[in-house]
Structure formats: C-alpha cells, structure tokens
Length: 459
Image 1: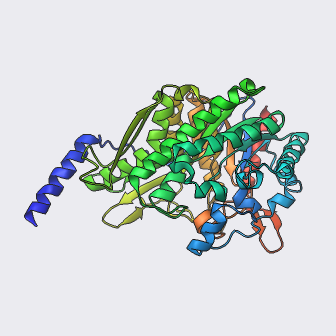
Image 2: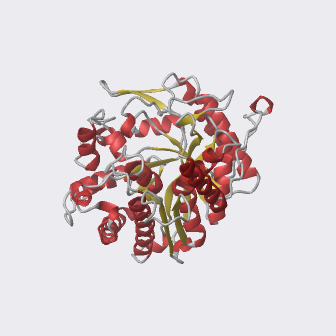
Image 3: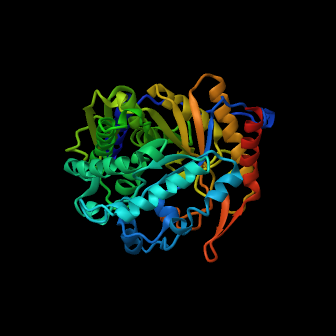
C-alpha cells in the first residue's frame, strides 16, 4: 500500500511537470451587464444549423445500425426534413436569417463504394437552388458524424488508406454543387467524433482505445487537408471557401486547488479542443493524454506527435462550435457546477464567458471565424432567451476587441435527433411535434429573431 502511494505521488508530480496547471476560468457579473448593448459588423451573417441524420431520418448508415445495437431511441423519420426541406425554407424566412448550414448524407449519395446516386445528388442540388432563390446562403457540411456502412466496415477513419474514399466523395459533391454553395465545411467536430466513439464509447464504433483515438483524430485532420487540396485543384476550386467545424469544449477543474481535477481536465482539454487548434495554427499535431511515461508501461495512455507543415494553409475560415465548459470533479466522479450556475438540460451550464474565451483561442489560427453551432437544450423554454442574449453579448465583446467573427449559426433550426440522447433534448428554435411534424416557433426564440431584426434595421 505504501509503495502504491509513493508511485501515485511521483506520477502526479510527473503529470504536473508535463502540463502547466494554470487557472483560466473566467466569470462575469451578469447583474451588471446589459446584454442589449451589442453591435456586429456590416455583412455579418446570421444563420441556423442542422445535420442530415438528425433531421432527415430513414437512412441506412452506421448510426442506424448503432441505434439498434445500443438500443437507443431510433431516429426513424426524425423531422422528415428530407421530404419537407422546401417547406422548411419558410421557417428560415420567419427567423429572418440569411444563411443555412446543413449536411449532405454520404450514405445517400454513395450507398456503395464508388457508386454515386444521381437522384440523391439532384435532391440536394434542387434544395440548394431553392435556398438561393429565397435569398439564403448555403453552408454545406460534407461529414457530420455518419458513415456509409461500407466505409464503416472498412475501418472508417482508423486507417489512413480509407481517407481517399472520403476525398472522392467530397470532390464529387463539390463538382455537382459548387455553383450553388457559398461555404464548405469538410468535417464537423472531428475531435467529438473521436472522443465519443473511442473514449466515451457512446458513438460508433464504441471502442475504448486512446492510441487508436489519436490515430483517428490525426486521420480526420489529414482527411480535411487532403479534401481541401483536392477541391482547390478543381475548376472553380480556387474561389471556394472551405473550412472545418471544431467544437471547443473547455474541461476545467471544479476544485481549483485539487491537482487531480486539474491534471485530468488538462488532459481532456488537450485531446478534445487544444490539439486541433494547435494543428491548424502550427502544423503540429500533438495528441497527449497522461504524461511522457512510456505507452508500453501504461497502454491506456497516448502520446502521438506528427508535423504537417501545410496545415495552416488548408483553411479559408475556421468554424467554431461552442456550447459550454465542463467542470470536472474527480471526487464526485462526474461534472459539477458553480454556485449560481444556470443549468441546461444537458450536463453543463450557461457559460457565455467560455464562448468569449473560445473565440480568442481559435483566432490564433489566423483565419476568419464563423460560429457554426451555438444553442441550448431547453425543453421548458425558460432559459433559451437568456442563453441567446448572453452568448451574442459575449460574441459582440470579442468582435469589439478586434476578433474577426463574420457569422453566427444557431443550433438548431428545429428539435431533432440528438444522437445518444435521442429526442429528449430540445435545441430547436422551432418546437417539433414528431407525430404530426408540426413546427412551432418557441417563445424563447424571439430573442434571436429580435437581434437579427435590430441588426438589419441598423445595417
């Protein structure tokens, strides 16, 4: 027992030396802040976001199989957005937004390796044209968590040789839609894809394997860069605006004087948030979880480094997804909250200060920033307005300080299928009755509508 305690002491000391443990949490006094005092630059883009599997439903992909395997609530028809997408343009007009971010479903377009479904391509093309005719800019995401079953069976992004399949898909989509799309997102939240699938195991393939997780995230970074280069070489590719959507999730110590809380939060923050930003800033991919201790001694640790010098030039803009921070309390064994925190329906609180911090962090990449996701799960609709006002205020503060934020896309246009949470979480500006498929604007969403209306009146 005494020997074990000595080893643990040395281990924690080693971790401390490996990771600088600085307190970076920021708190504002919201009682002294007027959230109405906001301003945004000319030509600022206001939009909303969705993803194909979450709103379209009825598709044979790896997530459809995963829902059955894990006995999750099935996605089913979801919002039936696939069939109602043209009708749903009216929802965008009702909000007053001028842009819509959505994803194409890879498994629809390429249901078999190398076989492209022209009917499905035409479906997405016709929808893009309808949006453009309605005065709505299109931000298209090519990968939002789901894979075709054939790609998943090949090992998906676990294997570098599989990246070319994704490149082929993306170049095909670009060739077919380049004239009706304004912005391109290659991959949505690569670190979350890795973390949920290879650390938490709530996403497919459900493997707990940190060394493999590091490889998957690296291959996703490489996939983005290869897609970027491939598209830029195509006719019209040089004019394309191509980015990636990355979720900044600030894992932080609940107990600021507790070494273990700090070490673990630093580890998670590195692999989920920081290493992706560092990659696009410097070209260095450094996936480190634990310490410099040999992986052969501690096989559940990962320490993977590689340099890809072209990375900083493989972005035209940076898409930032931000929701909140996570306060880790090792003693409690879960997330925790500060006194006075306003909790959401997910295990995190309203924390707009973190949004301000995230904007500052990703600005280090040196590219224009678009907020590609930001929104609250709020079934009672009694916190949505507060969220919207505080987060847009935080964004306005960052812009006033010179950070180059050019657009904001609220998540989500409507209630949808929230992955392992099923239909329980209500992110939508529009409430959806999944039996009748009726859409109804929530009262709390009017705060977003008002902000856009005031912006347009001033510009």
